[in-house]
Image 1: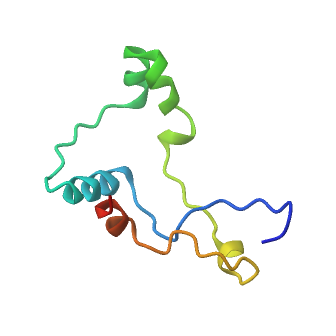
Image 2: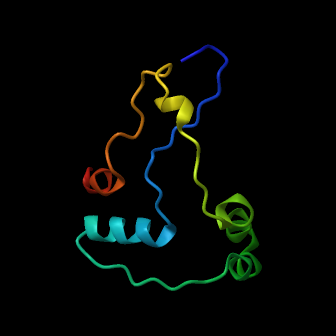
Length: 89
């Protein structure tokens, strides 16, 4: 890694929120019972908590990991699948 070079620590896995909740629930030995509520409704109900959901958290993102995997960055970030990490304590 080069000094002064910005690198985000993400994996090549692309999971949406439903998949994340399903994985965590299964790791806890249960199945999720999800209710989808729009972020703006949560923000209107509880501005202190819900406002943080508006903006970048309201949309899915995929990051370009090319720099991380191109060879100049030898550190292996997130090499364990999320489903396995969720089962670890």
